[in-house]
Length: 160
Image 1 (cartoon, rainbow, N blue to C red):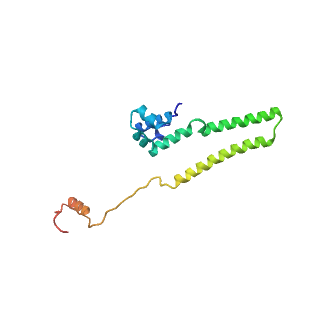
Image 2 (cartoon, one colour):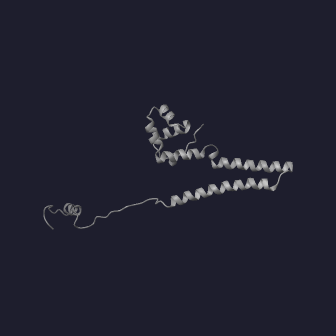
Image 3 (cartoon, one colour):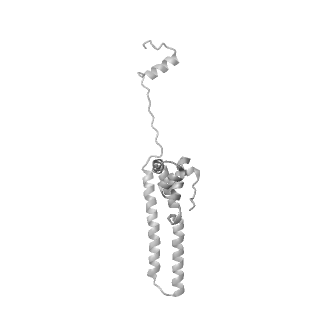
């Protein structure tokens, strides 16, 4: 099995974690990954449980084989074309056969779109960037007094 690679800018994962993730995708067994890479099973398990590693593994899994939406759509389109051709050539069959296949195709598409909408809603609920600013401008703070002393040249021990 060849593992598709993602562009570097989409993967924010440490190289050693990427090695463990790729080995896990190939071997599908934590014990085998630990033995192959010569690291403890607990380390492999801890790496695989990391959020960014899980996201990477899920992304690769969904892009490989028939889980890939493009490949699944191509297979479904081929099946529809084949069924249409078969019904046309044989002259046997009903519109219900074609309707059942098209209904299944539509169902797959709608389920996929609904999942995409749910993911977008989850992403919209999170702040993209959050900036917290703390302003300590009160004249009574020791920091401000030190700055005034340094800038103004006053004696630190003298009272204002």
